[in-house]
Amino acid sequence: IWLLMAVLFRYSSLSSLTAAVAAPLVYVLASGTAWYAETPELLALVAMAALLVYRHRENIQRLLAGTESRLGQKKKS
Image (cartoon, rainbow, N blue to C red; front, side, top):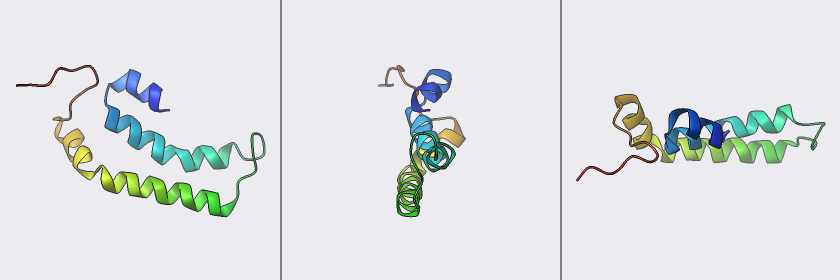
């Protein structure tokens, strides 16, 4: 998920946020095929995703404002 978002949009922070928010969903949807979902693990994934979103709040503001730097973009001096 991270790689797909990075290739499509070239924002590392957006890729990280999307992958983190998708992780609990992927965990539940793949349950029964690759593993069996259990509540403690699901709660841990949800908590980690929430913490990552909280820690990325400045990046989210820059993404919404259109000022977040893209992957491969040179820094402005």
